[in-house]
Image 1 (cartoon, rainbow, N blue to C red):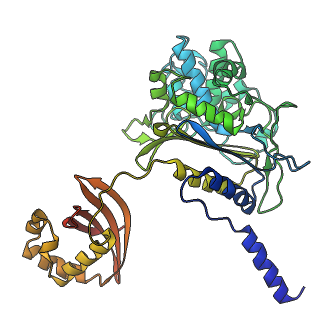
Image 2: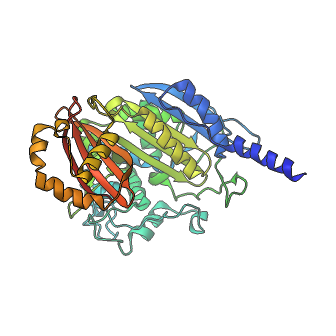
Image 3: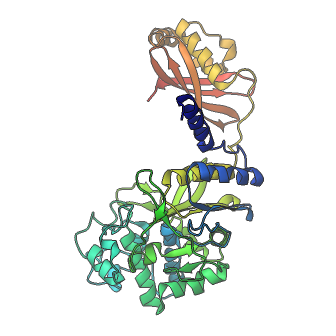
Length: 466
């Protein structure tokens, strides 16, 4: 092949592989059209995506293959392993038994496993919050030699919760799959059923998750095949974890639409009562007073002033994201049968941004934008001459001539402001509040600008930029 032709072909291939531009606002058709080229560009084997808004599923999209041989496509009924998304289901089983009066989330582990380390000092709630100190048996992102061999769950529990703790219970947060294997066995000991049977009878079937099941896949279940690759190699079938390594921590398999059913049932109070739901979604406060953004088997975060419930799931060959916005009865579910973590994380961020409520109300301000206003006021301070007609009365009074002279001397050292970036806008007292980073010739500075709708500056304070 001639060099010029080779370059031309390489350019075409690069252009074909470039991910498309994501939609700026949610439109089901636009999102659906975006998904297939995104999955192809990011080399994702298969995807099942569901988006609900205001309690209604507005997108149920499937892309790529559930299996590369014989090349079966993903459908809305394709089942994926959801990994650690299982944990919120296992925690819900514990809460259901508590509501039945058969246990308490404050029970000591010693009630069920007296031989475990510090079992008298660790509660079921500690296990659900990941603050027990028990070592995580699955900290890596591949199936190591241990997990190639089957293990009895009680043997796993004794091995990883019967030795030295990683830290004093309740003092730190550290993700531990071990705790959820214990919790799954507690459900079995108390209910007299397998965890799968209990979860199916009390959650999956009542919620209508008719395509979901707990435990290893069986023929006819419509299960996707998991894939993995190494160092940009070809996608190959992933070796699954052997029996006994996943149970209460990561043993659930779902369709995307079934997970949305769970999300809506959970936030609507159709799974747990109000007291249980509040504790399930309550971030854990550690012993020294710090709060961790995690409840019971579920992350609890604030994004754009909105509470979201979220959890990722990863096991060999699969990745999942489940994100819920209770305030708007919205959810995003992403299921994949490969290990393209960055790509799936990127997709999660794109879709979640589309379902979050809009930014809080900020008043319209007359005149120039906040960044330019801060830049101009900065220049005026540097010169030592300010236009008090552009200032509110109290801020003008605050800015004595002495303050202006001293500020001028200091701010001149930074040189001319070259760029103004508004990093955050909000409202307070009917004013626009803007956080601004000013980049100058010889450094950067942060500005906090308050303006009333008439455009007058009621406050503009400067501090060193990080």
